[in-house]
Image 1: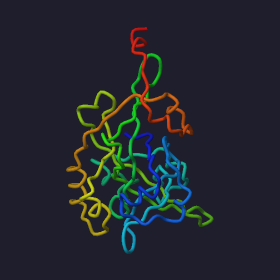
Image 2: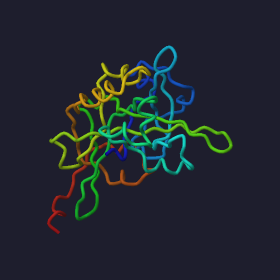
Image 3: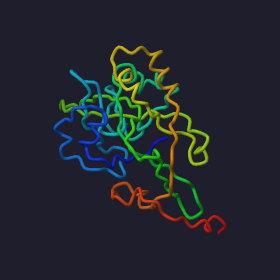
Length: 231
């Protein structure tokens, strides 16, 4: 699963990495160190003339949902079953996106409390998590754009921490993932072939546990008190 993630790069660097045109709403985007469910985050979709980057809320709300509150329970979708779940199937077939990130968080349960770890690439560069998105309209006609992150089995090296990780797509599959004409069989092949890259991790401050704490020290390594394991 992916319950928090980071995107600590400036939006200009993100747009360049994805060869995407940034929507005006992103001009006020700042580096994010602890993006939490139901918060807005940059995503990339296929637009006319090329890729476009804009903001959507994390937690997919199907167009038929009675209330946007359901999005808090739909931050992730299992890649193995996304084409069979009623809440996700339509978006999987017609509305896919890339979710830029440079790390995500998982937690280890300890006697002293939950210890967060920041999981990232060795170079801490931006990568693309596979995503799906939806457009929901309220009774007054206002539109809400939301997304979900697809997950897969974790690589054995980090399975001790969590059994699921985001699907990280290599750049040579981005166009096929975003394209409207990609068939369901090819989409599933893209997901199945997207082996997780080598991931690094280190423990970070427990301040990360608090949604709303979004400071640079979220990703800084900390020493942990292993003596607490024997108390």
